[in-house]
Length: 177
Image 1 (cartoon, rainbow, N blue to C red):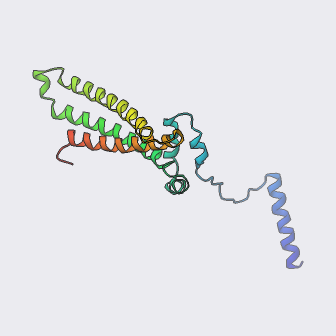
Image 2 (tube, rainbow, N blue to C red):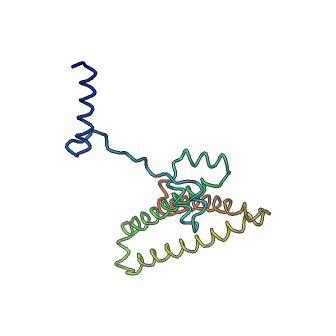
């Protein structure tokens, strides 16, 4: 038999074996690329927290491209998500630190640490409401259209949150700043 006929028959045997389930092809497992989020999906997010989460999942290269196309349309949302996470972690860390540092105060003032935790929570809530209201006001007070204001408001929120993180670090961890 010629070499051609052997290859031809060998291929036929392999094909028939695969078709009947007698053998399996050695194929690498299908690797699906990680899901990417389309910018349009993020813009259509139902609320601001959903939009922030959506943009936080986008690769930095896509955020950069989005910013080249639409300034302040993507990056502030991604940054705000990250800053919210950082702020929440800092508040937990600060509370743990003061509970440890001021544990001896409980002997003379049993409610001291509970009050401190309560005041930190109330301060965080009041600050957040102030930040959001102030950042809603700022672009409109400068004459921006409502269409432009949304992204500028988010940028303002990110800037103010970064400042709050610095403020809390200075208050709770003064030697580290």
